[in-house]
Image 1 (cartoon, helix red, strand yellow):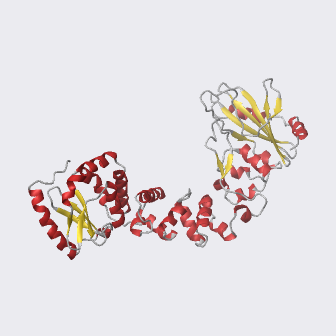
Image 2 (image 1 turned 30 degrees about the vertical axis):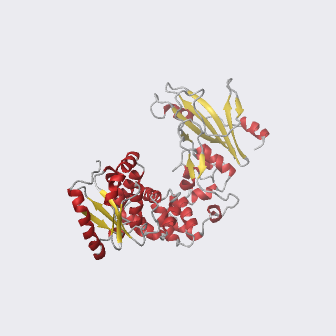
Amino acid sequence: MKQARKEMLLGAFPPLPGELYDEMKNKDPKSYAKNFVVFLTDGNELFARCYHRYCRGGLVEKQRYVFAKDGCVRYAADNTGCWKIAKKFREPSFYGGANPFGAYDNSYDILNKKAIRRSCMKYSKLEKYLKFGTLAIEYLHLYCRHPNVEYIVEAGFGEAILKENPHSIYISCPPRSIFLMEEINWKSNDLRKMLGLTSEEIKLLKGHEKNLSAFKKWRAAYPRQPAEDILQLAEYHSNVVYAPSDVEKTGISPMRWLKYILSQDISYIEYSDHLRLCEQLDYDLHDTAISMPKDFGKFHERCSQAIKYAHNKQAREAFEKNYAQRQQLEYEGEKFMVRQPASIDDITAEGCALHHCVASYAERHAKGVLHILFIRQKSEPDKPFYTMELGVDGSIRQVRGLRNKPATGDIEKFLDGYKEYISGMFHKQKVRISA
């Protein structure tokens, strides 16, 4: 809108009808401060006059706006009460001066909506926007720049796309405004091109418009997946940011992932946290025993404990303190050998490699409450094979292999020799570990 036209429109504001003045004065309890935006029209343009009613009843006009086919303009009163063209267009602020508390209620009631239908803003779909939004002035500002926003609102996608900033009621920084959740092709009046959807996808999203953003992100990640499946994924996690990439880390199909998530009754955040824990533990996320454990809750808890132990400074110090005394627990047979972990991280790595919960025993091992020992094949001394828990009395409490596999006959036979080796050791209390 040109400067000369803005100046001309300032003198074209229709007078405030007496019935609207009375409505503002008497609306709701008179002792309450309240804000109003009154729409008026006299020809084609839509005029907005913004009033603040003080708690004692005084009514003061704070700002003015004009919306026309060639643009829009805001007017503000200076210190002398004269109206001037404002430099910036924004939602009305009904309070003057500095705000020491950082918040004033700038919400407002709209009066005389019928004026919209008699003006050039009649196709703006403002009334439909107001069913989910509150920033009427900002919406009309958007409509003046992009009249095709009406297609988005009419199709039901307005709520998904037109978001208000967190300070939509109170004066703050940044100022109240509408921001777009999606990239819109404003050069087209074709809803498909505007949203980047096919006709079939628009029909599919009918009634699910709020999932538009998630739908597009999931679709971008899995372009060959049926649209119906993509919608299910979007409905499960609508605020998707990292979910597709998390699913890709596991190597499983998105629908298999979703089926697992729903069967375990867990949220995406819980699952994402689980993946991060597993990554820190160097677990193989492509192993379904890791990415889709049968009992998610128990396995996730064990992973959490493993992370805690792996980073526990006191546990590390205790481990180093007791390392030398445990050397006598090491043993070699014909095919197998028993060795102690060289560090507390070795226990975590053992659990990771064999997919069992030995990591949760790491701190107790470090403190001497029990002993964790590794059974290895002599031909592959560094490759996890079986893990053994030894009690402080020398008893073998459990031996577990890959995915908690019990000891085989060969291992049992080997352990008979190991029991004989340590029996006198504990009986004579040669193994003294500080607890």
